[in-house]
Length: 155
Length: 155
DNA sequence: TGCTATTAAATAGCACGCGATGTAATATGC
DNA sequence: GCATATTACATCGCGTGCTATTTAATAGCA
Image 1 (cartoon, helix red, strand yellow):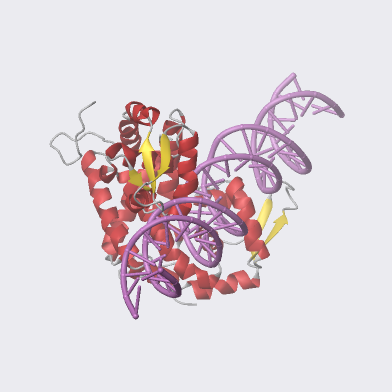
Image 2 (spheres, rainbow over the protein chains, first blue to last red; image 1 turned 180 degrees about the horizontal axis):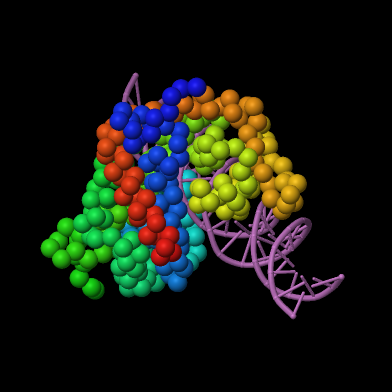
């Protein structure tokens, strides 16, 4: 048996205690966030990952599958079926690029562009659900982005 | 078109810009974290959610499914098949409680208890992958726990 | 030109995570 | 004591997210 120390003790060491772990805090907060989004996105007919794809396309239309993947840290394995569902919903179109037949270009349909109006209220609703100040949220975001970069580097 | 303001502007308002969003930072950091864990847990034959269940059981053995669920914020829909897989791996046993036949009591097997030794190195490896100071990690964890509580309240 | 390597996306299979629903055991109310 | 409600799990179906593999198109190069 090795000695367990909590991260609150004088000489903190990583432990197997669930309550101590940043990772579980991250994981379970993500579950909570998903719950909030599920409720908000239900009226838009979107899941959270689908919403993320729409956010990307509302910023810049006509992207390759892999370009969307780069922005969202997802690969074609995840995106291909997701994009087919968005296509089936009538929000996007998938067309092979003429210049390079390997590429599938994702384009917003009129309906997909129109959905942006309904989505405008989502960030505000999520903001309210967090009960945080903008400063707190920006601070957490920036710390997370730093952590994300390091985790990807060491993955 | 409504005016978009970034959260860096003087009067911050929640926006549809991906790069601005705490939620995407949380989501994508979770993906990165999962990558790190997958590599570490592969030699233990565990997924991250399975690892979480083992953490709970290593702290306290002989728990009901719903007690594990309460600790991990997961319900029987997720846990039942997961626990069956852990049972198939020989790490836990599932037995109906005599006092209340509705309850399924989860018990560690000898092999499940033994796995704790191999798991001892995991938190340290993850800690290294974060390249953060313990103080930074504790601070992020506590901010996340606060956020989690608020999100569950408003879900 | 023709052969090989690389790239973009898709497919198959597995493991979550959850909403909706079902089932069996226990608790409650009259 | 018996009908009803509640509780604890389980089942079904769907949508990710990933590993391993496949297919088709393009690039590179002798």
